[in-house]
Image 1: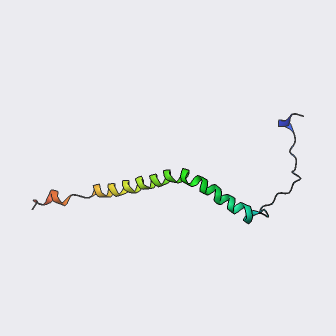
Image 2 (image 1 turned 45 degrees about the horizontal axis):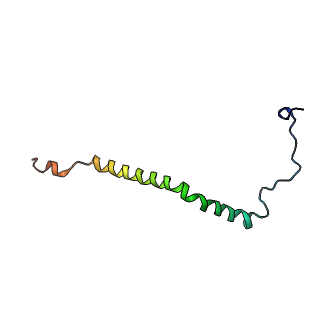
Image 3 (image 1 turned 90 degrees about the vertical axis):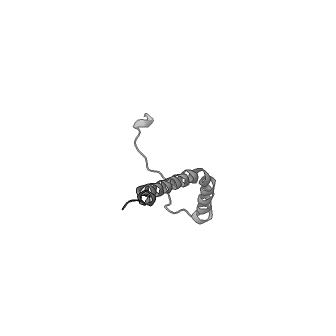
Length: 74
């Protein structure tokens, strides 16, 4: 029978929702993967945050009127 048309089978190997070696291997592996990728992923987000906050501060600054422009008004 063609593999695309084959009927689904049930996997006989049991799957664990919470593996036995989660604390001994899983958490350290997650930490290792995080450390290896943080300097590749974080800088664009930091740059985006800096640009976003600068843009909001600049917008608020430009919304205000300059008091020096109105010193000679009565």
